[in-house]
Image 1: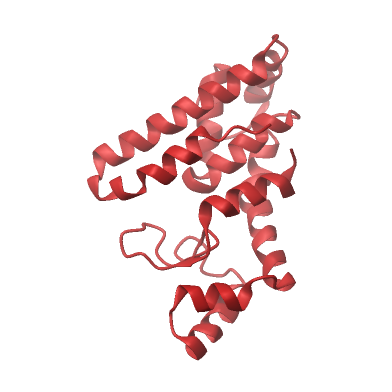
Image 2: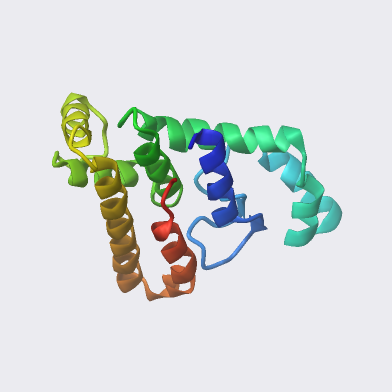
Length: 186
Protein backbone atom coordinates (compact mmCIF):
# COMPACT_ATOMS: atom_id res chain seq x y z
CA UNK A 1 0.00 0.00 0.00
CA UNK A 2 1.01 3.61 0.23
CA UNK A 3 0.15 6.78 2.11
CA UNK A 4 -2.53 7.70 -0.45
CA UNK A 5 -4.16 4.25 -0.38
CA UNK A 6 -4.11 3.98 3.41
CA UNK A 7 -5.44 7.53 3.68
CA UNK A 8 -8.55 6.35 1.80
CA UNK A 9 -9.00 3.64 4.45
CA UNK A 10 -8.52 6.17 7.25
CA UNK A 11 -11.03 8.57 5.70
CA UNK A 12 -13.57 5.77 5.32
CA UNK A 13 -13.20 5.08 9.06
CA UNK A 14 -13.42 8.76 9.95
CA UNK A 15 -16.40 9.88 7.87
CA UNK A 16 -17.28 13.52 7.25
CA UNK A 17 -18.19 16.45 9.49
CA UNK A 18 -19.30 15.75 13.04
CA UNK A 19 -19.71 17.45 16.37
CA UNK A 20 -20.66 14.65 18.77
CA UNK A 21 -20.64 15.95 22.38
CA UNK A 22 -19.39 12.53 23.56
CA UNK A 23 -16.46 12.51 21.12
CA UNK A 24 -13.34 13.56 23.00
CA UNK A 25 -12.08 15.15 19.79
CA UNK A 26 -15.04 17.53 19.77
CA UNK A 27 -15.85 19.00 16.39
CA UNK A 28 -14.24 17.00 13.59
CA UNK A 29 -13.97 17.09 9.82
CA UNK A 30 -12.87 13.88 8.11
CA UNK A 31 -11.39 12.82 11.44
CA UNK A 32 -9.48 16.03 12.02
CA UNK A 33 -10.31 17.25 15.51
CA UNK A 34 -10.64 20.99 16.05
CA UNK A 35 -9.57 20.50 19.66
CA UNK A 36 -6.31 18.80 18.64
CA UNK A 37 -5.75 20.91 15.49
CA UNK A 38 -7.18 24.38 16.16
CA UNK A 39 -4.85 26.06 13.66
CA UNK A 40 -5.61 23.72 10.76
CA UNK A 41 -6.30 25.91 7.68
CA UNK A 42 -9.45 23.93 6.83
CA UNK A 43 -11.39 25.35 9.79
CA UNK A 44 -12.00 28.87 8.38
CA UNK A 45 -13.70 27.56 5.19
CA UNK A 46 -15.75 25.13 7.28
CA UNK A 47 -16.81 27.96 9.60
CA UNK A 48 -17.84 30.04 6.58
CA UNK A 49 -20.00 27.20 5.27
CA UNK A 50 -21.50 26.67 8.74
CA UNK A 51 -22.57 30.33 8.78
CA UNK A 52 -24.31 29.77 5.44
CA UNK A 53 -25.97 26.39 6.02
CA UNK A 54 -25.83 25.92 9.78
CA UNK A 55 -24.05 23.07 11.50
CA UNK A 56 -25.80 20.43 9.38
CA UNK A 57 -23.28 17.68 8.78
CA UNK A 58 -24.81 16.60 5.48
CA UNK A 59 -24.75 20.12 4.05
CA UNK A 60 -21.14 20.70 5.15
CA UNK A 61 -20.04 17.35 3.70
CA UNK A 62 -21.86 18.05 0.44
CA UNK A 63 -20.27 21.49 0.12
CA UNK A 64 -16.73 20.09 0.39
CA UNK A 65 -17.27 16.84 -1.56
CA UNK A 66 -14.67 16.71 -4.32
CA UNK A 67 -13.11 20.06 -3.33
CA UNK A 68 -9.43 19.60 -4.31
CA UNK A 69 -8.20 22.39 -2.01
CA UNK A 70 -9.89 20.84 1.04
CA UNK A 71 -8.73 17.35 0.02
CA UNK A 72 -5.15 18.63 -0.11
CA UNK A 73 -5.49 20.28 3.32
CA UNK A 74 -6.84 17.04 4.79
CA UNK A 75 -4.12 14.91 3.17
CA UNK A 76 -1.33 17.27 4.24
CA UNK A 77 -2.42 17.21 7.89
CA UNK A 78 -2.60 13.41 7.89
CA UNK A 79 0.79 13.11 6.19
CA UNK A 80 2.65 15.49 8.49
CA UNK A 81 0.96 14.75 11.81
CA UNK A 82 0.20 11.02 11.57
CA UNK A 83 2.09 9.32 8.72
CA UNK A 84 5.54 10.91 8.85
CA UNK A 85 6.10 10.23 12.59
CA UNK A 86 5.42 6.49 12.19
CA UNK A 87 7.08 6.13 8.76
CA UNK A 88 10.49 6.29 10.41
CA UNK A 89 9.78 3.00 12.22
CA UNK A 90 10.39 0.73 9.25
CA UNK A 91 10.91 0.67 5.50
CA UNK A 92 8.21 -2.02 5.37
CA UNK A 93 4.99 -0.50 4.02
CA UNK A 94 2.41 -2.79 5.64
CA UNK A 95 3.56 -2.21 9.25
CA UNK A 96 3.81 1.54 8.64
CA UNK A 97 0.37 1.60 7.02
CA UNK A 98 -1.15 -0.18 10.04
CA UNK A 99 0.64 2.19 12.42
CA UNK A 100 -0.59 5.20 10.43
CA UNK A 101 -4.19 3.96 10.45
CA UNK A 102 -4.09 3.29 14.20
CA UNK A 103 -2.15 6.46 14.99
CA UNK A 104 -4.96 8.60 13.63
CA UNK A 105 -7.15 7.28 16.44
CA UNK A 106 -4.65 6.67 19.25
CA UNK A 107 -1.95 9.17 18.28
CA UNK A 108 1.33 8.43 16.51
CA UNK A 109 3.06 7.97 19.86
CA UNK A 110 0.47 5.36 20.85
CA UNK A 111 0.99 3.50 17.58
CA UNK A 112 4.75 3.62 18.03
CA UNK A 113 4.44 2.32 21.62
CA UNK A 114 2.43 -0.68 20.37
CA UNK A 115 5.04 -1.34 17.67
CA UNK A 116 7.84 -1.06 20.22
CA UNK A 117 6.17 -3.64 22.44
CA UNK A 118 6.00 -6.00 19.46
CA UNK A 119 9.65 -5.63 18.46
CA UNK A 120 10.82 -5.84 22.08
CA UNK A 121 12.18 -2.42 22.88
CA UNK A 122 11.27 0.24 25.43
CA UNK A 123 7.76 1.53 24.65
CA UNK A 124 8.39 5.26 24.89
CA UNK A 125 6.66 6.39 21.68
CA UNK A 126 9.85 7.70 20.09
CA UNK A 127 11.64 6.17 17.11
CA UNK A 128 15.30 6.29 18.04
CA UNK A 129 18.34 4.12 17.26
CA UNK A 130 17.34 1.32 19.66
CA UNK A 131 13.83 1.10 18.20
CA UNK A 132 15.19 1.12 14.65
CA UNK A 133 17.67 -1.65 15.47
CA UNK A 134 14.97 -3.74 17.17
CA UNK A 135 12.59 -3.24 14.23
CA UNK A 136 15.28 -4.20 11.71
CA UNK A 137 16.10 -7.38 13.65
CA UNK A 138 12.41 -8.23 14.09
CA UNK A 139 11.56 -7.83 10.41
CA UNK A 140 14.55 -9.96 9.36
CA UNK A 141 12.66 -13.01 10.66
CA UNK A 142 10.51 -15.07 8.26
CA UNK A 143 6.84 -14.09 8.44
CA UNK A 144 7.58 -11.12 10.64
CA UNK A 145 5.26 -8.69 8.85
CA UNK A 146 2.24 -10.95 9.30
CA UNK A 147 3.12 -11.55 12.95
CA UNK A 148 3.55 -7.80 13.45
CA UNK A 149 0.20 -6.95 11.83
CA UNK A 150 -1.72 -9.64 13.76
CA UNK A 151 -0.17 -8.68 17.07
CA UNK A 152 -0.65 -4.98 16.41
CA UNK A 153 -4.37 -5.53 15.65
CA UNK A 154 -4.77 -7.48 18.89
CA UNK A 155 -3.00 -4.85 21.00
CA UNK A 156 -4.93 -2.04 19.33
CA UNK A 157 -8.25 -3.69 20.21
CA UNK A 158 -7.03 -4.45 23.73
CA UNK A 159 -6.27 -0.75 24.17
CA UNK A 160 -9.76 0.23 23.03
CA UNK A 161 -11.35 -2.21 25.48
CA UNK A 162 -9.25 -0.83 28.35
CA UNK A 163 -10.24 2.71 27.31
CA UNK A 164 -13.93 1.76 27.45
CA UNK A 165 -13.44 0.10 30.85
CA UNK A 166 -12.01 3.40 32.15
CA UNK A 167 -14.66 5.52 30.45
CA UNK A 168 -17.94 3.65 29.74
CA UNK A 169 -19.31 6.63 27.77
CA UNK A 170 -17.04 5.50 24.93
CA UNK A 171 -18.87 2.17 24.43
CA UNK A 172 -20.87 3.71 21.60
CA UNK A 173 -17.67 3.77 19.53
CA UNK A 174 -16.76 0.08 20.01
CA UNK A 175 -18.09 -1.11 16.64
CA UNK A 176 -16.03 1.45 14.74
CA UNK A 177 -12.99 0.83 16.91
CA UNK A 178 -13.31 -2.93 16.39
CA UNK A 179 -13.41 -2.41 12.60
CA UNK A 180 -10.33 -0.22 12.88
CA UNK A 181 -8.42 -2.74 14.94
CA UNK A 182 -9.33 -5.54 12.52
CA UNK A 183 -8.11 -3.66 9.43
CA UNK A 184 -5.02 -5.24 7.90
CA UNK A 185 -3.07 -3.69 5.02
CA UNK A 186 -2.83 -5.95 1.99
